[in-house]
Amino acid sequence: MENKITIVSPGDQSIVAKRTLATNSEIKETLTSTLNAQLQWQALSIEQRSEYCLQAIDWFMQNQDELAKEISQQMGRPIQSAAGEIRGLQERALHMISLAESSLKDIPLPTKAGFKRFIRATPLGSIMVIAPWNYPYLTAINSIIPALISGNCVILKHSAQTLLCAERFAQAFKSAGLPSGVFQFLHMNHHQTLDLVRHPVIKYVHFTGSVEAGRVIEKGAAGLFKGIALELGGKDAAYVREDAKLDSAIDSLVDGAFYNSGQSCCAIERIYVHESLYDDFVKGFVSQANELVLGDPLDEHTTLGPMVNVKSADVARQQIRQAKKLGAVCHIDEGNFIINGQFTHKKATLNKNIAKQAHSNYLPPQVLTNVTHKMDIMSEESFAPVVGIMKVKNDAQAVQLINDSLYGLTASLWSQDQDACMLLGDQIETGTVFMNRCDYLDPALPWVGVKDSGRGCSLSKLAYQQLTRPKSFHFKKV
Image 1 (cartoon, rainbow, N blue to C red):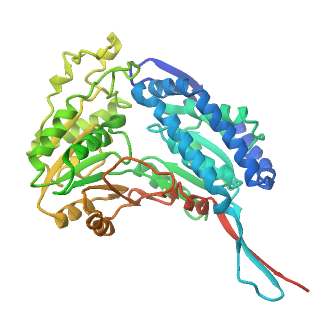
Image 2 (cartoon, rainbow, N blue to C red; image 1 turned 30 degrees about the horizontal axis):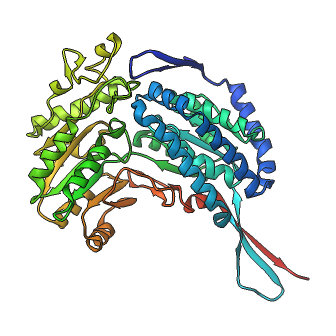
Image 3 (tube, helix red, strand yellow; image 1 turned 30 degrees about the vertical axis):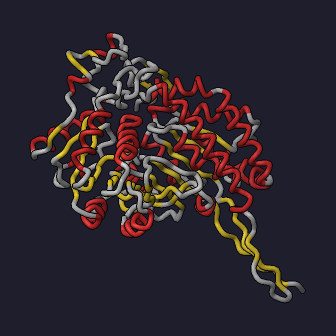
Protein backbone atom coordinates (compact mmCIF):
# COMPACT_ATOMS: atom_id res chain seq x y z
CA MET A 1 0.00 0.00 0.00
CA GLU A 2 1.33 3.44 -0.95
CA ASN A 3 2.14 5.36 2.22
CA LYS A 4 3.15 8.67 0.64
CA ILE A 5 1.06 11.76 -0.11
CA THR A 6 2.23 14.35 -2.62
CA ILE A 7 0.55 17.73 -2.99
CA VAL A 8 0.71 18.87 -6.60
CA SER A 9 -0.13 22.53 -7.17
CA PRO A 10 -3.06 23.10 -9.56
CA GLY A 11 -1.33 26.30 -10.68
CA ASP A 12 1.84 24.97 -12.27
CA GLN A 13 1.92 21.26 -11.37
CA SER A 14 4.89 21.81 -9.07
CA ILE A 15 5.25 19.69 -5.94
CA VAL A 16 4.19 21.70 -2.90
CA ALA A 17 4.93 19.10 -0.25
CA LYS A 18 5.33 15.40 0.41
CA ARG A 19 4.13 13.62 3.52
CA THR A 20 3.97 10.08 4.90
CA LEU A 21 0.73 8.48 6.04
CA ALA A 22 0.30 7.86 9.73
CA THR A 23 1.33 4.39 10.91
CA ASN A 24 -0.95 2.16 12.93
CA SER A 25 1.11 2.87 16.04
CA GLU A 26 0.85 6.63 15.47
CA ILE A 27 -2.92 6.37 15.12
CA LYS A 28 -3.10 4.30 18.31
CA GLU A 29 -0.93 6.82 20.14
CA THR A 30 -3.15 9.67 18.94
CA LEU A 31 -6.28 7.93 20.23
CA THR A 32 -4.65 7.22 23.58
CA SER A 33 -3.55 10.83 23.86
CA THR A 34 -6.98 12.26 23.09
CA LEU A 35 -8.59 9.89 25.57
CA ASN A 36 -6.17 10.89 28.32
CA ALA A 37 -6.57 14.60 27.65
CA GLN A 38 -10.33 14.86 27.41
CA LEU A 39 -11.40 14.85 31.06
CA GLN A 40 -8.77 17.40 32.05
CA TRP A 41 -9.78 19.63 29.15
CA GLN A 42 -13.45 19.27 30.02
CA ALA A 43 -12.67 20.32 33.60
CA LEU A 44 -11.45 23.73 32.47
CA SER A 45 -13.89 26.62 32.42
CA ILE A 46 -15.36 27.90 29.18
CA GLU A 47 -13.36 31.07 29.72
CA GLN A 48 -10.09 29.13 29.98
CA ARG A 49 -10.82 27.03 26.90
CA SER A 50 -11.79 30.17 25.00
CA GLU A 51 -8.52 31.87 25.86
CA TYR A 52 -6.50 29.06 24.27
CA CYS A 53 -8.63 29.32 21.13
CA LEU A 54 -8.31 33.10 20.98
CA GLN A 55 -4.53 32.84 21.10
CA ALA A 56 -4.60 30.29 18.29
CA ILE A 57 -6.69 32.65 16.16
CA ASP A 58 -4.15 35.39 16.83
CA TRP A 59 -1.47 33.11 15.37
CA PHE A 60 -3.50 32.72 12.17
CA MET A 61 -3.88 36.48 11.82
CA GLN A 62 -0.17 37.07 12.40
CA ASN A 63 0.68 34.58 9.65
CA GLN A 64 -2.14 35.29 7.20
CA ASP A 65 0.07 36.36 4.27
CA GLU A 66 2.09 33.16 4.35
CA LEU A 67 -1.04 31.06 4.85
CA ALA A 68 -2.79 32.78 1.93
CA LYS A 69 0.10 31.90 -0.37
CA GLU A 70 -0.07 28.29 0.78
CA ILE A 71 -3.79 28.19 0.02
CA SER A 72 -3.10 29.35 -3.54
CA GLN A 73 -0.29 26.84 -3.98
CA GLN A 74 -2.25 23.91 -2.56
CA MET A 75 -5.67 24.35 -4.19
CA GLY A 76 -5.36 27.13 -6.78
CA ARG A 77 -7.38 30.04 -5.39
CA PRO A 78 -6.17 33.42 -6.70
CA ILE A 79 -3.81 35.06 -4.23
CA GLN A 80 -5.82 38.30 -4.23
CA SER A 81 -8.72 36.54 -2.50
CA ALA A 82 -6.94 33.78 -0.56
CA ALA A 83 -6.25 35.95 2.50
CA GLY A 84 -10.00 36.45 2.87
CA GLU A 85 -10.25 32.89 4.12
CA ILE A 86 -8.07 33.66 7.14
CA ARG A 87 -10.15 36.74 7.94
CA GLY A 88 -13.26 34.60 7.62
CA LEU A 89 -11.74 32.06 9.98
CA GLN A 90 -11.28 34.81 12.54
CA GLU A 91 -14.86 36.07 12.12
CA ARG A 92 -16.41 32.65 12.60
CA ALA A 93 -14.17 31.65 15.48
CA LEU A 94 -14.76 34.87 17.41
CA HIS A 95 -18.51 34.63 16.92
CA MET A 96 -18.66 31.02 18.12
CA ILE A 97 -16.53 31.89 21.15
CA SER A 98 -18.85 34.81 21.94
CA LEU A 99 -21.84 32.43 21.98
CA ALA A 100 -20.24 29.81 24.20
CA GLU A 101 -21.25 31.00 27.67
CA SER A 102 -24.92 31.49 26.83
CA SER A 103 -25.12 28.35 24.69
CA LEU A 104 -23.46 26.00 27.18
CA LYS A 105 -24.79 27.30 30.50
CA ASP A 106 -26.91 25.06 32.70
CA ILE A 107 -30.64 25.12 32.02
CA PRO A 108 -32.56 25.53 35.32
CA LEU A 109 -36.03 24.11 35.84
CA PRO A 110 -38.90 25.59 37.84
CA THR A 111 -38.39 25.30 41.60
CA LYS A 112 -39.75 22.10 43.16
CA ALA A 113 -39.71 21.80 46.96
CA GLY A 114 -37.03 19.42 48.17
CA PHE A 115 -35.37 19.02 44.78
CA LYS A 116 -32.60 20.56 42.70
CA ARG A 117 -33.05 19.96 38.99
CA PHE A 118 -31.20 21.26 35.95
CA ILE A 119 -29.86 20.23 32.53
CA ARG A 120 -26.16 20.47 31.73
CA ALA A 121 -24.54 20.42 28.29
CA THR A 122 -21.87 17.71 28.53
CA PRO A 123 -19.04 17.18 26.00
CA LEU A 124 -19.32 14.10 23.81
CA GLY A 125 -15.63 13.26 24.15
CA SER A 126 -13.33 12.98 21.13
CA ILE A 127 -14.50 14.55 17.88
CA MET A 128 -13.21 13.63 14.42
CA VAL A 129 -13.25 16.41 11.83
CA ILE A 130 -12.80 15.44 8.18
CA ALA A 131 -12.14 18.65 6.21
CA PRO A 132 -12.15 19.32 2.43
CA TRP A 133 -9.70 21.19 0.19
CA ASN A 134 -11.94 23.88 -1.32
CA TYR A 135 -12.12 26.09 1.80
CA PRO A 136 -9.49 24.32 3.88
CA TYR A 137 -9.57 26.61 6.93
CA LEU A 138 -13.15 27.89 6.90
CA THR A 139 -14.80 24.48 6.73
CA ALA A 140 -12.55 23.09 9.45
CA ILE A 141 -12.92 26.02 11.86
CA ASN A 142 -16.72 25.65 11.76
CA SER A 143 -16.49 22.52 13.87
CA ILE A 144 -13.04 22.70 15.51
CA ILE A 145 -13.66 25.83 17.60
CA PRO A 146 -17.12 24.93 18.97
CA ALA A 147 -15.93 21.36 19.62
CA LEU A 148 -12.98 22.58 21.70
CA ILE A 149 -14.92 25.33 23.48
CA SER A 150 -17.59 22.84 24.55
CA GLY A 151 -14.96 20.60 26.17
CA ASN A 152 -14.28 18.02 23.45
CA CYS A 153 -10.91 16.96 22.06
CA VAL A 154 -10.42 17.07 18.28
CA ILE A 155 -8.63 14.87 15.76
CA LEU A 156 -8.43 16.51 12.33
CA LYS A 157 -8.07 14.58 9.10
CA HIS A 158 -7.61 17.03 6.23
CA SER A 159 -7.86 16.52 2.50
CA ALA A 160 -4.72 15.14 0.86
CA GLN A 161 -4.75 18.23 -1.37
CA THR A 162 -4.48 20.62 1.59
CA LEU A 163 -2.89 18.62 4.37
CA LEU A 164 -0.54 21.50 5.21
CA CYS A 165 -3.59 23.22 6.69
CA ALA A 166 -3.87 20.49 9.32
CA GLU A 167 -0.27 21.14 10.29
CA ARG A 168 -0.92 24.88 10.52
CA PHE A 169 -3.83 24.28 12.89
CA ALA A 170 -1.46 22.25 15.05
CA GLN A 171 1.10 25.07 14.97
CA ALA A 172 -1.54 27.61 15.95
CA PHE A 173 -2.73 25.59 18.95
CA LYS A 174 0.84 24.78 19.99
CA SER A 175 1.68 28.48 19.96
CA ALA A 176 -1.35 29.01 22.22
CA GLY A 177 -0.03 26.47 24.69
CA LEU A 178 -2.96 24.08 24.24
CA PRO A 179 -2.55 21.03 26.50
CA SER A 180 -1.15 17.94 24.82
CA GLY A 181 -3.71 15.65 23.19
CA VAL A 182 -6.53 18.19 23.01
CA PHE A 183 -6.01 18.95 19.31
CA GLN A 184 -4.24 16.52 16.99
CA PHE A 185 -4.13 15.72 13.29
CA LEU A 186 -3.49 12.60 11.25
CA HIS A 187 -2.56 12.21 7.58
CA MET A 188 -4.52 9.11 6.51
CA ASN A 189 -5.83 7.32 3.44
CA HIS A 190 -9.50 6.44 2.94
CA HIS A 191 -9.21 3.03 4.61
CA GLN A 192 -7.51 4.45 7.70
CA THR A 193 -10.04 7.27 7.88
CA LEU A 194 -12.99 4.88 7.82
CA ASP A 195 -11.37 2.75 10.52
CA LEU A 196 -11.03 5.84 12.72
CA VAL A 197 -14.66 6.79 12.09
CA ARG A 198 -15.62 3.39 13.48
CA HIS A 199 -13.28 3.50 16.47
CA PRO A 200 -15.08 3.59 19.85
CA VAL A 201 -12.93 6.47 21.13
CA ILE A 202 -14.44 8.71 18.42
CA LYS A 203 -17.84 9.87 19.63
CA TYR A 204 -18.80 12.24 16.83
CA VAL A 205 -17.76 12.77 13.20
CA HIS A 206 -18.08 16.00 11.25
CA PHE A 207 -17.53 15.35 7.55
CA THR A 208 -17.48 17.89 4.72
CA GLY A 209 -17.18 16.55 1.19
CA SER A 210 -18.96 14.79 -1.64
CA VAL A 211 -22.30 13.01 -1.45
CA GLU A 212 -20.65 9.72 -2.40
CA ALA A 213 -18.06 9.97 0.37
CA GLY A 214 -20.77 11.04 2.82
CA ARG A 215 -22.68 7.85 2.10
CA VAL A 216 -19.55 5.80 2.78
CA ILE A 217 -18.99 7.60 6.09
CA GLU A 218 -22.61 7.14 7.16
CA LYS A 219 -22.62 3.48 6.17
CA GLY A 220 -19.33 2.91 7.97
CA ALA A 221 -20.74 4.26 11.23
CA ALA A 222 -24.09 2.47 10.94
CA GLY A 223 -25.11 0.73 14.14
CA LEU A 224 -22.47 2.45 16.26
CA PHE A 225 -24.87 5.03 17.71
CA LYS A 226 -22.52 7.95 17.30
CA GLY A 227 -23.39 11.35 15.94
CA ILE A 228 -22.50 12.26 12.38
CA ALA A 229 -22.78 15.64 10.67
CA LEU A 230 -22.57 15.62 6.88
CA GLU A 231 -21.96 18.78 4.86
CA LEU A 232 -22.26 17.55 1.31
CA GLY A 233 -22.95 18.85 -2.19
CA GLY A 234 -25.14 21.53 -3.64
CA LYS A 235 -26.74 22.72 -6.84
CA ASP A 236 -27.63 26.13 -5.50
CA ALA A 237 -30.14 28.25 -7.33
CA ALA A 238 -30.89 31.94 -7.66
CA TYR A 239 -34.19 33.51 -8.69
CA VAL A 240 -34.18 37.04 -10.10
CA ARG A 241 -37.71 38.40 -9.68
CA GLU A 242 -39.19 41.05 -11.94
CA ASP A 243 -38.69 43.73 -9.26
CA ALA A 244 -34.99 42.96 -8.71
CA LYS A 245 -32.30 45.62 -8.95
CA LEU A 246 -30.64 44.25 -12.05
CA ASP A 247 -27.13 45.65 -11.71
CA SER A 248 -26.81 44.52 -8.11
CA ALA A 249 -28.12 41.05 -8.92
CA ILE A 250 -25.69 40.63 -11.80
CA ASP A 251 -22.68 41.81 -9.79
CA SER A 252 -23.40 39.49 -6.88
CA LEU A 253 -24.37 36.45 -8.93
CA VAL A 254 -21.27 36.62 -11.14
CA ASP A 255 -19.21 36.56 -7.96
CA GLY A 256 -21.39 33.80 -6.48
CA ALA A 257 -20.98 31.64 -9.57
CA PHE A 258 -17.29 32.10 -10.32
CA TYR A 259 -15.56 32.86 -7.00
CA ASN A 260 -13.10 30.07 -6.15
CA SER A 261 -13.68 28.81 -9.71
CA GLY A 262 -17.15 27.71 -8.65
CA GLN A 263 -15.62 25.13 -6.32
CA SER A 264 -17.96 25.75 -3.43
CA CYS A 265 -20.89 23.72 -2.15
CA CYS A 266 -22.97 26.92 -2.07
CA ALA A 267 -21.77 28.38 -5.37
CA ILE A 268 -24.51 29.56 -7.71
CA GLU A 269 -24.89 26.88 -10.39
CA ARG A 270 -28.32 27.67 -11.83
CA ILE A 271 -30.17 30.95 -12.24
CA TYR A 272 -33.86 31.53 -12.97
CA VAL A 273 -34.75 34.98 -14.28
CA HIS A 274 -38.18 36.53 -14.75
CA GLU A 275 -38.93 36.87 -18.44
CA SER A 276 -39.20 40.68 -18.22
CA LEU A 277 -35.53 40.94 -17.14
CA TYR A 278 -34.12 37.90 -18.84
CA ASP A 279 -32.43 39.40 -21.92
CA ASP A 280 -30.84 42.27 -20.03
CA PHE A 281 -29.70 39.96 -17.26
CA VAL A 282 -28.03 37.50 -19.62
CA LYS A 283 -26.31 40.31 -21.52
CA GLY A 284 -24.95 41.90 -18.35
CA PHE A 285 -23.97 38.59 -16.76
CA VAL A 286 -22.03 37.42 -19.83
CA SER A 287 -20.30 40.79 -20.13
CA GLN A 288 -19.01 40.59 -16.56
CA ALA A 289 -17.98 36.95 -16.91
CA ASN A 290 -15.83 37.92 -19.88
CA GLU A 291 -13.92 40.34 -17.63
CA LEU A 292 -12.58 37.55 -15.43
CA VAL A 293 -8.82 37.02 -15.65
CA LEU A 294 -7.88 33.35 -15.97
CA GLY A 295 -4.31 32.74 -14.92
CA ASP A 296 -1.66 31.75 -12.43
CA PRO A 297 -3.24 31.86 -8.94
CA LEU A 298 -0.09 33.47 -7.55
CA ASP A 299 -0.41 36.42 -9.97
CA GLU A 300 -2.14 39.35 -8.24
CA HIS A 301 -4.14 40.14 -11.41
CA THR A 302 -5.75 36.69 -11.61
CA THR A 303 -9.41 36.56 -10.63
CA LEU A 304 -10.16 33.03 -11.92
CA GLY A 305 -7.67 30.34 -10.98
CA PRO A 306 -7.35 26.74 -12.11
CA MET A 307 -9.62 23.97 -10.94
CA VAL A 308 -8.14 21.61 -8.41
CA ASN A 309 -7.36 18.90 -10.98
CA VAL A 310 -7.97 17.72 -14.53
CA LYS A 311 -10.64 15.21 -13.51
CA SER A 312 -12.82 17.91 -11.97
CA ALA A 313 -12.46 20.16 -15.01
CA ASP A 314 -13.33 17.30 -17.35
CA VAL A 315 -16.58 16.63 -15.45
CA ALA A 316 -17.64 20.21 -16.16
CA ARG A 317 -16.55 19.97 -19.81
CA GLN A 318 -18.65 16.84 -20.22
CA GLN A 319 -21.68 18.61 -18.75
CA ILE A 320 -21.19 21.50 -21.19
CA ARG A 321 -20.86 19.11 -24.16
CA GLN A 322 -24.01 17.25 -23.17
CA ALA A 323 -25.96 20.49 -22.74
CA LYS A 324 -24.87 21.78 -26.16
CA LYS A 325 -25.86 18.48 -27.73
CA LEU A 326 -29.32 18.85 -26.19
CA GLY A 327 -29.73 22.40 -27.49
CA ALA A 328 -28.08 24.69 -24.94
CA VAL A 329 -26.34 27.85 -26.12
CA CYS A 330 -22.87 28.75 -24.79
CA HIS A 331 -22.22 32.48 -24.44
CA ILE A 332 -18.51 32.51 -23.58
CA ASP A 333 -15.94 32.06 -26.34
CA GLU A 334 -13.04 30.05 -24.93
CA GLY A 335 -10.80 32.06 -27.25
CA ASN A 336 -11.45 35.08 -25.02
CA PHE A 337 -9.31 33.33 -22.43
CA ILE A 338 -7.08 30.73 -24.07
CA ILE A 339 -5.62 30.55 -27.58
CA ASN A 340 -3.11 27.84 -28.52
CA GLY A 341 -2.47 27.05 -24.88
CA GLN A 342 -1.77 30.66 -23.92
CA PHE A 343 -3.86 32.90 -21.69
CA THR A 344 -4.93 35.88 -23.76
CA HIS A 345 -5.66 38.49 -21.12
CA LYS A 346 -3.01 41.18 -21.24
CA LYS A 347 -2.63 41.14 -17.47
CA ALA A 348 -2.33 37.37 -17.07
CA THR A 349 1.16 36.01 -16.66
CA LEU A 350 2.19 32.40 -16.92
CA ASN A 351 5.16 30.17 -17.35
CA LYS A 352 5.58 27.26 -19.74
CA ASN A 353 4.26 24.73 -17.27
CA ILE A 354 1.03 26.69 -16.81
CA ALA A 355 0.59 27.10 -20.56
CA LYS A 356 0.76 23.34 -20.97
CA GLN A 357 -2.10 23.02 -18.48
CA ALA A 358 -4.33 25.57 -20.21
CA HIS A 359 -6.66 22.93 -21.63
CA SER A 360 -6.71 20.66 -18.61
CA ASN A 361 -7.46 22.02 -15.16
CA TYR A 362 -7.55 25.64 -16.40
CA LEU A 363 -11.22 25.99 -17.31
CA PRO A 364 -12.59 29.26 -18.74
CA PRO A 365 -15.94 30.40 -17.31
CA GLN A 366 -19.05 29.38 -19.18
CA VAL A 367 -22.62 30.69 -19.26
CA LEU A 368 -25.36 28.61 -20.90
CA THR A 369 -28.93 29.45 -21.88
CA ASN A 370 -31.71 27.44 -23.51
CA VAL A 371 -31.07 24.90 -20.77
CA THR A 372 -33.51 22.43 -19.18
CA HIS A 373 -33.52 20.16 -16.16
CA LYS A 374 -32.95 17.20 -18.46
CA MET A 375 -29.36 18.43 -18.75
CA ASP A 376 -26.73 17.54 -16.15
CA ILE A 377 -25.65 21.18 -16.10
CA MET A 378 -28.95 22.00 -14.36
CA SER A 379 -29.35 18.90 -12.21
CA GLU A 380 -25.95 17.47 -11.25
CA GLU A 381 -23.36 19.29 -9.18
CA SER A 382 -20.78 21.00 -11.41
CA PHE A 383 -18.37 22.41 -8.81
CA ALA A 384 -16.87 24.49 -11.59
CA PRO A 385 -17.04 27.99 -13.13
CA VAL A 386 -20.11 27.17 -15.23
CA VAL A 387 -23.73 28.28 -14.80
CA GLY A 388 -27.02 27.76 -16.60
CA ILE A 389 -29.67 30.50 -16.89
CA MET A 390 -33.38 29.82 -17.49
CA LYS A 391 -36.29 32.15 -18.20
CA VAL A 392 -39.36 31.84 -15.93
CA LYS A 393 -42.84 33.36 -16.08
CA ASN A 394 -43.63 33.77 -12.39
CA ASP A 395 -42.77 32.93 -8.78
CA ALA A 396 -44.55 29.59 -8.85
CA GLN A 397 -42.52 28.32 -11.77
CA ALA A 398 -39.29 29.54 -10.16
CA VAL A 399 -40.02 27.74 -6.88
CA GLN A 400 -40.95 24.55 -8.71
CA LEU A 401 -37.64 24.60 -10.58
CA ILE A 402 -35.58 25.47 -7.52
CA ASN A 403 -37.10 22.52 -5.63
CA ASP A 404 -36.62 20.18 -8.59
CA SER A 405 -33.24 19.05 -7.30
CA LEU A 406 -31.64 16.28 -5.30
CA TYR A 407 -29.86 18.99 -3.33
CA GLY A 408 -31.03 21.54 -0.80
CA LEU A 409 -28.26 23.72 0.56
CA THR A 410 -29.08 27.36 -0.27
CA ALA A 411 -31.22 29.41 -2.62
CA SER A 412 -31.10 33.15 -3.20
CA LEU A 413 -33.95 35.50 -4.09
CA TRP A 414 -33.32 38.84 -5.79
CA SER A 415 -36.13 41.29 -5.17
CA GLN A 416 -37.16 44.49 -3.42
CA ASP A 417 -40.22 42.85 -1.87
CA GLN A 418 -39.25 41.28 1.46
CA ASP A 419 -42.77 40.04 2.20
CA ALA A 420 -42.95 38.21 -1.12
CA CYS A 421 -39.54 36.66 -0.51
CA MET A 422 -40.61 35.53 2.95
CA LEU A 423 -43.53 33.64 1.43
CA LEU A 424 -41.28 32.10 -1.21
CA GLY A 425 -38.69 31.20 1.39
CA ASP A 426 -41.20 29.05 3.26
CA GLN A 427 -41.82 27.08 0.06
CA ILE A 428 -38.18 26.55 -0.92
CA GLU A 429 -36.58 23.26 0.15
CA THR A 430 -33.13 24.39 1.32
CA GLY A 431 -31.25 24.88 4.55
CA THR A 432 -30.73 28.60 3.89
CA VAL A 433 -32.72 31.16 1.90
CA PHE A 434 -30.96 34.41 0.99
CA MET A 435 -32.45 37.67 -0.21
CA ASN A 436 -30.18 39.92 -2.29
CA ARG A 437 -27.03 38.02 -1.40
CA CYS A 438 -25.59 34.55 -1.96
CA ASP A 439 -22.64 32.26 -1.33
CA TYR A 440 -22.05 33.39 2.24
CA LEU A 441 -22.02 31.79 5.70
CA ASP A 442 -23.17 34.01 8.54
CA PRO A 443 -21.76 32.47 11.75
CA ALA A 444 -24.85 33.60 13.66
CA LEU A 445 -27.02 31.31 11.52
CA PRO A 446 -26.87 27.50 11.41
CA TRP A 447 -25.27 26.07 8.28
CA VAL A 448 -27.44 23.13 7.34
CA GLY A 449 -28.48 21.20 4.27
CA VAL A 450 -31.48 19.05 3.37
CA LYS A 451 -31.89 16.19 0.91
CA ASP A 452 -28.52 15.14 -0.56
CA SER A 453 -26.87 18.26 0.82
CA GLY A 454 -26.51 16.49 4.14
CA ARG A 455 -27.69 16.64 7.74
CA GLY A 456 -26.66 18.13 11.03
CA CYS A 457 -25.50 21.72 11.38
CA SER A 458 -22.51 23.87 12.15
CA LEU A 459 -22.22 27.50 13.31
CA SER A 460 -24.70 29.46 15.44
CA LYS A 461 -25.63 28.49 18.98
CA LEU A 462 -27.28 25.35 17.60
CA ALA A 463 -23.83 23.95 16.74
CA TYR A 464 -23.16 23.53 20.45
CA GLN A 465 -26.19 21.25 20.71
CA GLN A 466 -24.59 18.99 18.09
CA LEU A 467 -21.31 18.76 20.00
CA THR A 468 -22.72 18.11 23.49
CA ARG A 469 -25.32 15.85 25.02
CA PRO A 470 -27.91 16.92 27.60
CA LYS A 471 -27.26 15.52 31.05
CA SER A 472 -30.03 15.66 33.62
CA PHE A 473 -29.36 16.41 37.29
CA HIS A 474 -32.17 15.39 39.63
CA PHE A 475 -31.16 15.80 43.30
CA LYS A 476 -33.46 15.15 46.25
CA LYS A 477 -32.69 16.75 49.56
CA VAL A 478 -32.88 14.35 52.51
